[in-house]
Image 1 (cartoon, rainbow, N blue to C red):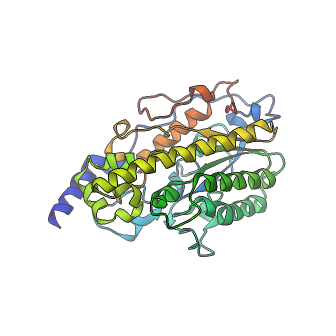
Image 2 (tube, rainbow, N blue to C red):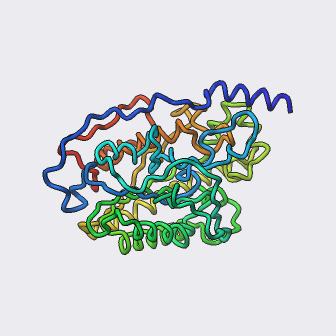
Length: 369
């Protein structure tokens, strides 16, 4: 027990409790648009009026502030105000706050923090959302892709429709979807029949169909999955993290099982993750072929090929050495932003902490090709 306390202390010192200054948005202001986007293929940062998000505990911001040495209830909060894609806290470094630089009155950013909201397959208690803080961040901890279709979209669509500041038909909307980690983490157990790539493709297509139907003028970021085996590899850099995963491998059993069996499971896990990504690209390609003027769904691959050597140990929350830390969320926001402003053939698939922000000019668009 004493050794575990010491290793936690060392981990917290090394990570500095992720008090981060290094991922700060530094782009210049742009003049007002003379011609707003008429189609999604012309969409510029200044055009976006509404931000939205769907996903799991990552987008909910679960545990990002880590442990403070003693496990207190607040350690298990969701810090939605700093969520990489939609957080709106005043000092946050997120896609939403980057866009606020160009559209000060942007609508939908989640703020603050609160106790975690659980939606895990059939375990989805009603009335968990806190709309005052969640706003248009519909992500729930534990969610799988089936939960996006069955639960999260209902909340999101209703909230957007009920918001009097949203011009549903005319406002351009940005929605970021990151889902699949929980599906992958139990896929090796073969206890749930609908985790196959075919099922993932089906549910993703259902999700996009509903978004297209109910949320006009939407640009969807489809964040591709990373190889979860790399979280295990990264955790080996820390005695504390190795102890945590030994004690609670159930958080991602397919990644954290040890020994020869674990090695095989991690290989299979990575194969499945890349198959999910292949299906995401397939679905996105079909939607691109439709050439809608008011809808696009774009794969964003910024961590699809990331390796453990690409990032430091403080990329992981000191709470469980699994969820992204504040530093990770800030880095993900920067990487996603750069992906959005980069043509498909040039999008990065790994993290580069030294990479500068791609700063938009008067002619920059969010690429749909």
